[in-house]
Image (cartoon, rainbow over all chains, first blue to last red; front, side, top):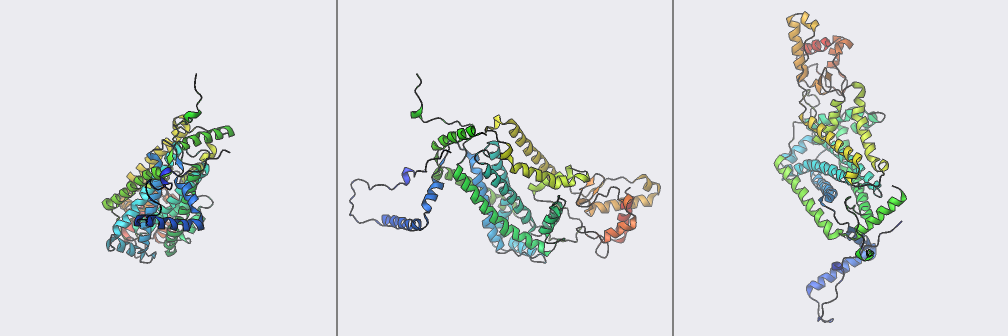
Amino acid sequence: MPKLPAVPIPPRFLPQPPPPGTQRGRPRTPLEKGAEAGKSAVDWIDERTSLSGGVRWALFRKVPKGTNWFYTLGSATMIAFLNQAVTGVFLAMYYRPDAGGGAYESVRYITNDVFLGQFVRGMHKWGSSVMVILVFLHMGRTFFFGAYKYPRELNWVIGVVLLILTMTMSFTGYLLPFDQRSYWATIVGVNINGTGPLLGPYLSDFLRGGPEFSATTLSRFYSIHMLLVPGAIAAMIGAHLYLVAKLGTTAPPWLRAKPEPELVEEQL
Amino acid sequence: MNQREKEEYLREYSILKSQGKPFFPYAVAKDGLMGCLVIAIIIALSIVLGAELGPKANAATTTYTPRPEWYFFFLFELLRVIKPPNFVGLATIGVPTLAMILLFLLPFYDRGPERHPLRRPVATLTGIFVICAMAYLTYLGANAGPPTENDIPAPAAVLAQGKPAVSEFYLGRSVVAQSGCEACHLIGSNGNNGPGPELTKIGDRIPPQAIARTLVNPTEPMPSYGGSGGLPAKQFSAVVAFLSDLK
């Protein structure tokens, strides 16, 4: 198995020698002192964690020539997820998962009374649509460019898991405002699950927290939406990114490698 | 891909990679620009479209039409497209499950070394077909009318009973249509097949008294239409008459 060479540090990030004409013993300017302090802090952390190798490996790895804007769809999806995480944290500060009266009122309070509440809720609501669209676009790019092929099969599988988790997020989040629309759509959605073969009825019972829709259902959806799935998504994104850095970004499929000029035999 | 093709790919890729630019700052700058665009779009959507909150959830209402989030429309539409009752399980869980399995296993059955979309015509055409099918189903779902209409004509047996029976039939029909029954029940070509049973020939299967009993004490999740909180007596008996005339 051929191994890719170790990642070099680009010249601009290498320590520079002092410009000619400067003396060694002169007093340092405040700027230089600040830079020294920063360096020693980074060194202190690196001495105890050895992180610098990993950071260098992730940041200064090379990306093939010819990668275009289609290659930004994956990171755009992650940005959309981060948007959901941040806005979700702020919504959770006000939301009460109480079906008996509280859930709907707390969402109404967020929408009408909280400073910028409707704006943040709108960002969360529309961010989910944007994230789903970006997931599908990213998957389309991977599919049409053949980027799921050797050696990136496992990363494709992780991506499909992320797609399913994203859809689970949309499904569980839809109930939380607890208005008519979300309530009835969720009842039908859970019933549709129940018609499935083998596991269908068990999955429905698990989602409802019993044979019937009850107060437990809302807190169950809330917990899945807030804790279970976001944790799983974050972990899966980590694995996905590790594999991207490890295996490298794919080159566009129409690109052919030209050997280094000094290696080409002169044609006579 | 056999071993030779794998090694060929890795060699080719390592040359392309070594001729590329470092991820930081070049790719990071592009990703950052795209990220800013995404956040700007989300902010614009939030400001322009806002976040509406409908009326509070009420398990007792009967006129509400369930609608999922728009990106689930294609799954929801599969229910309507695949109508025969025996195949409902296939539409709801069978097709999505199969699609998921095919998606998971894609790199394991598509092992050809070719990566260019034009040199993989089967994969490319399948991908385009799937995208078009999903777009079409989403379009259908977005334009599906609320199931509040019913165009079943009065059967000959009702017409033979004279005017009062016919008008009761049509009153029952309009009450059924407006009460949201068709959100879950199929009546002829109206309404959705599932989660409730088909009612096209319900009059054949159970007598009027049983229909009335079911309307008052239904199986969950169907709401009750009888009793003090239900339909007025006249409408209720019209519904029972309408349903038992469906033969």
